[in-house]
Every structure is written in structure tokens, then in C-alpha cells.
Image (cartoon, rainbow, N blue to C red; front, side):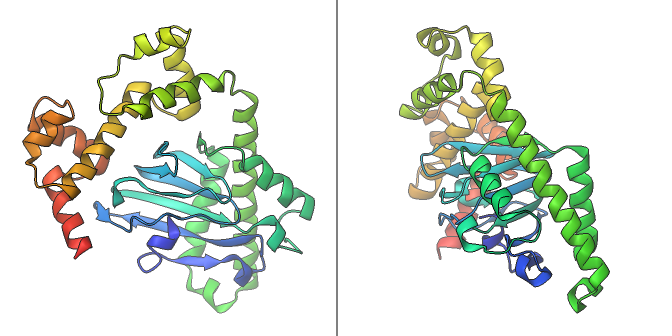
Length: 297
């Protein structure tokens, strides 16, 4: 979970404290610079929604699938699905997160009916997907940010708590609507699953997107458009992120030079490797290795 790894750095609120038992906890996370975090996996009895307001971040699921999220997007992590921030490093970003309690754990929900909470979780539990944050949802998140910064909320202001509950309701409903819309337009999702299987089977190999598309029986342009629509990025961008992930592991587990690792993973030069690395992680390979060594000791 995003929140569980940074609660000592950012404000969070437990749903039951404001009379919303179906929300386990929620809060904001702000990283001014890249910051090392735990490599531990997280999962919850209910789904988790993470809204990236500025910057970007990338998570991985237990099956190695990457879930990249850029500013103005949010991701849904299904109930009981293990996930963690990729590479053990939060890039510079500002995010809002909600962890929903498991439907079986809530007997009297406040924002949704009992049937509605069950349907909400079943709907969000089909697959972790990225979506654009609609203006109405972003406005509600901004309102939550304002309310969490008001000290009266922590002394039991009934009006502010009611406003907070209303904003949470809007965020949850907008997330549900976005998932509903995307699931209705997923089209040939088996193509995406097949492509990811090919990619993850040999992530260090040079990938010819056109050849893979032809092997799967589709054109390169169709694969590109379908992948971007469903995953939120191009196939080549996803493959690049996967190479960076593998190179991060090598930086931490070996004494090889940055130049040797850059060449091994097909970046051509240490300078290009550093540029791509900073693009995705907000730091250089050398700085990343240093941060990970500090974390381990």
C-alpha cells in the first residue's frame, strides 16, 4: 500500500474516526525528491485506489506486471492482490490514496448500501487498471486536501466531517464510474495479456513490437493503440520501464559498474542510461545504488 509505507511522513485518517467504516484509511503522500522505501508486498481485504496528482509513480503486482501512473491518473489495486512500489523507490510525486475495507468486514456502511459496497468491490476487483482523474473527482480530492489541513477536523467539527464524508463519497463513485466505463471498452484484452506474457518471459531481450504483434495476429498500430488505451502507456515505454526495473536489481545485487550495467541492458552508454533512469525514478543510477545501500544498512 502507498499509505502504509509513509504514514510517518504524511497525514492520514481512519475511516471509522469520521463514521465511514467502509473506508479503512486514506491520506496524502508527498515526496519532494526520490525516496527509498520498503520492498515489502502489501495487500488488503478491500481494494486500494491511488490518485497521482503530480509527478509519477510505478507499482508492480506479484506476477511482475507493472502499473505506471502519471499525474492526472489513478490506479485500482484489487482486494487481496499483492503490490508494491517498483524498484523500492518513490519518485518525486504528490498522491492521494484510499484503502477500502473488505465488504465482509463492514456490517453498516455509511457512504454506500451494503449491496452497493459489495458491488463496488466486485467491480473494482476484476483487474488493477489505470484511469484518468475526471475534474469532479480532482475537485473532491482538492477538497479533502483542504479539509485535512484544517485543525478543526481533528477536534471533531461536525460540519467539516460531513464535508469530508461527502468528498470521499464523490471520489469513490467517480472511481467506480471510471472502472465501469473502461471495463465496457476493454475489447481484445487477451491480446494485452499475451503481449505481456511475451515481454515478461524475456524482459532483457531487444523487443521488436511489430514482430510480436504479427506473431499474435495483429498489426503493430493496433497493438500500440490497444495497449495504450488499456495500460496507459505505449508498449515500448512499458518495455523500457521493465528494463529499468531489471537494471535496478543488478545495481543493488552486484558490484558491476554503471557503464557495464548500461551496456548489459542495451542502453548504449552510461549517459543515456542515466537520462532514462532519471526520467522514470527522479534520480541517477549511482544515487539509487547509494540510497539502497543506506536502506539495507
